[in-house]
Amino acid sequence: MKNNKKISIKEIAELSGVSVATVSRVINNNGRFSEETRKKVLDIIEKYDYTTNMAAKSLRVSKSNTIGVIVPDINNLFFAELVLEIENFFFKHGYSVFICNTGQNEVKEKEYFKSLDSKLVDGIICISSNFVNPSQILKRNIPVVYLNNTDMKEYYCVECNHYDGGFRATEELIKKGCKRIVLLTNNKRASSVNNKIKGYKDALNKYNIPLISELILRLDLKEGVFEDSLKAINNLIENNMNFDGIFATNDIRAHSALVALQQHNIDVPLKVKIVGYDDTSVSKYANPPISTIYQDKKQLADKSSNLLLNLIDKKNIDDDKHIIIPIKLIERKTT
Figure: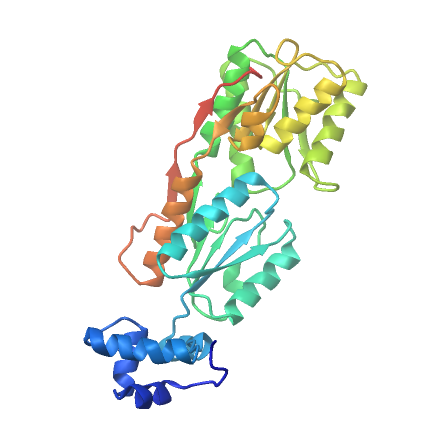
């Protein structure tokens, strides 16, 4: 059983017969000490259940070995898997991770920046499409790395090639015979959304297919991504809007579109073809499985995490603040 008495480093030093500096070296596993000394100190630590006061230590050494991750929707499998990869990376490097879910709410995002700053985190990875500028909120000069958002020009950003993703998703539908293609996306004016839309429009233009504004659905987040998308596709069907393809800018929207079509007994892919985005398990295990654009979550997580770690450690890094990762098309049964 652990001893309930609180113990200081000075008392550990006295009980183990070594100096305070030696105890500190053992705790931080840094510097020279014998195996006998290490065992003696660790036995005292275990006996009295000593834990480092991380708040005091972080003030002393200006480092807390914690980072924050701001995520827009933890229910979205793409974001959940991405955050898990980031957490795994930093755990291996001795960091704890605070995960902050904003629900795409700008007020919550601002509050989380303030909260992470007050918790003395060493850095922040922000996965957000909101126009919240950390430099106007953070009181400390700490590094921030963005994922899939180049709108904050002063910060580093790691993203997939969303223009190419939008273009290739639309091109896949065109090559399979579609001429009236719905774009199912959100109303965010973020770079990732805008680049997908530009890719969509340029693909239509390349193949001389007219742009039909009524088929561009930019949705507000009211009831949820799935529910809002379901209503939008149902509305097209019930108003007899003619379409033969859907490019949905994430797999949840793509699956929602598939469900809406199936509810109206519209055959996929015979009558309408669908391409999603992200390549989450939603697209893989839908019936039929959904063609999608693959974003490499591991590479996104590793590159952004490595970059943040180098910024924290003040290592030399590339001046180019924009890192782009290639996408690829995964062809499945919906095309």
